Each structure stands twice: as structure tokens, then as C-alpha cells.
Length: 134
Image (cartoon, rainbow, N blue to C red; front, side, top):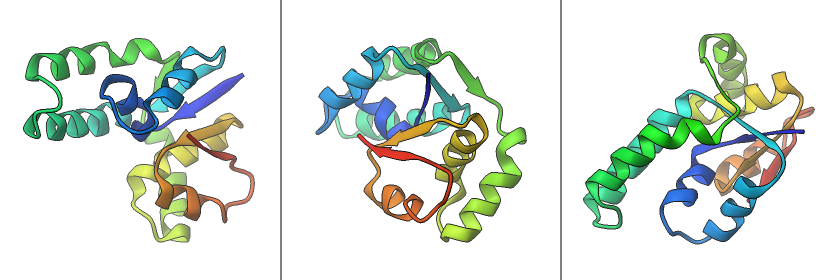
């Protein structure tokens, strides 16, 4: 079985936060992990903030970003998801970045996991896309 993981979950694999234990359980699960390749940009930005606040060292952030793709069976390119992500973003009135994960979950017919409470609430109104709370 496959699972779509968003950047809010992936970040918790590398930076100790509330919910890191649950995120690590996702990583250790037998499910094949997938994400849109946008995850690298979002993870990189989150790591930049962690470096700026002194939570993560610069070199550690660079190593995490270099190694992050290895945690996934596949990082899916954005062009094949863009139209559906835009439709979902317009329907939910939510930033399109998060909607790429939803579009991928819908296309791959598998669940998505997130630690983003706002996304979780909004995605709950969608039919046919299972979104799990971390």
C-alpha cells in the first residue's frame, strides 16, 4: 500500500517537533511513501527557517535536503498534477502548494498524511480523498 506524505510530516523526521514520534512511525511503516517533488522545496524552506532559528545546523539542513528523496519510493513531477491541484485549490480556497499532495493522493488512490491542521479541516470536505492526521 502507498501513502502520500506532505512536508509537514517529512520535516518532523529531521527536526524534533511535536509529533516527531508519530512521523517516525510513518517512516517506519511498511507503506510505500510518495510525494510531489514540490516536497523538496517546502522541506528546504522549512529547514532554512530551522537554521535561522538555531534549531538545525546549516550542514545538517543541506544533508537532509540531499538525502530526503531516498525516503520516498517516488517523488512525482508537478506538471501531471497541476491542473487538478489548481481545481482543488479553487474549490477549497486554499494555497495550491498543499493541493498538489491532495491531487497526488486522488490520482494514486491512496491516503495522504499531514500535520497541517488547517489543511486537514479543509480537505475533510473533499470526496474521494482520504487525508489522515499525523
